[in-house]
Image (cartoon, rainbow, N blue to C red):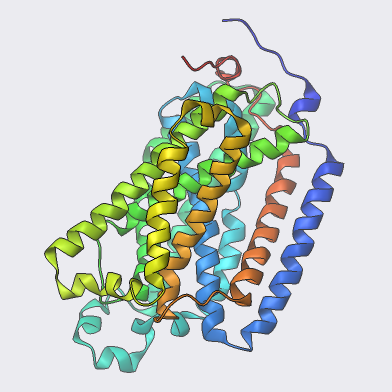
Length: 399
């Protein structure tokens, strides 16, 4: 295999560029969160529903990036080495997400019907579920989830950075071994976390496929955001000759595949519940089809499946950076719409009520999240320079 070389200026991001981007993001984030804090006193109930929606969006992005890193290791995928560092920096925002999770603890009674003692006392089903759905156990589980995710994210990130410094090829095997049990821990914790935080908003409803639904969306949004970040870096002169059209093509194929998988899981969940027609199961969809929410559901069917299914299928669309960028942006937007449709009907059962709460929280989360992310990019090179398969990745071709 012909050795491919790279320039130092291509793989180390300039401090001035990061200071500009990170500083602008942080200002937007802090101003928006300050405004959202003011809105909290206007309507705390609305605030916490909007907060949970935006939190779920960025939580899925973080966890999807963690999964992508682990799956690259466990499958020994050489092509993905040059795009892995972006995913590693995204997953390493798990500490930030824990801090952003803490305000939700003050909104448990605003969000979750099962947290009210009088509601449990008059509801047999909530009494049956009480050993699991109670506030102390809810908090303990959340802490356990974040500890596991923090351990996995730090383990992979620090080992990858250590390999950049010493070039020890045995660290690759260590990360592969970690990924084997890491994927099992991830599957369990990710599923139960969104069962706790989102599915229990409707405590009488249940679905054995709900965790998989969020997993599919998490991975899809992570792949599309990684792609968009690589395009931003490319536009500013970084990784231009290292992350090639071949890599974008593979990222596009994976994004497309997980979009299809999300659609399949969403349809399976709906179809089985519709077919059985059991009141305890239809409760969720009845709530989410009321009023103008049915139009959001139609938008998801068309926009989250139909448009990308036809528009992103072509090899040429994936290999053209402009059209690929458009489809990636569209899928990120549709994932946010999905989070909004899943969560907000509990607050507004009659239909859509998109407001300033949702806008300022989205800007606040996004500003702080990407400010921390871009700052972290300065701590290391933009690619794992001493991974033993780096030359394979740099010379990767789609055939």
